[in-house]
Amino acid sequence: MKYQIHNKRLVVPFTGDLLSTVAAEMKPGFATLFSKTTVHESPWSELELDLTQARMIDSAGLNLIMTVLKAAQERKVKVIARVASKTVQRIIQFTRLDRSLELILQED
Image (cartoon, rainbow, N blue to C red):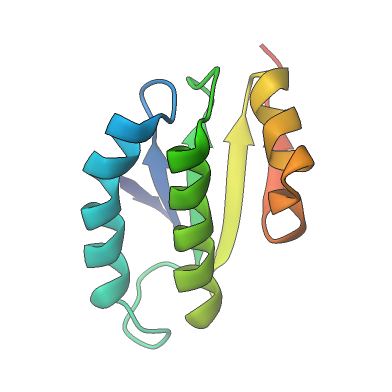
């Protein structure tokens, strides 16, 4: 899993749709990030999920986001989802995940 740290924000870019195969590949990476991170040890206090390349999210992708949200909330890490697709925005809003994260629509 690739990521970058900008100031206190860890940015995790998704290179395409967040479907079951991608979710399965990324889940261990998020587990590793959170297992090594406590509030005091972390060089980052915000996590940005860069979903600007995603046009679709399936149930496994939603499950990954929920798992990440739970781990982030336990460590008091703010989660931001940056999206470019109105479809992805609606999926996040329909599932009410936008109540647990900050949703940013990036206009094309």
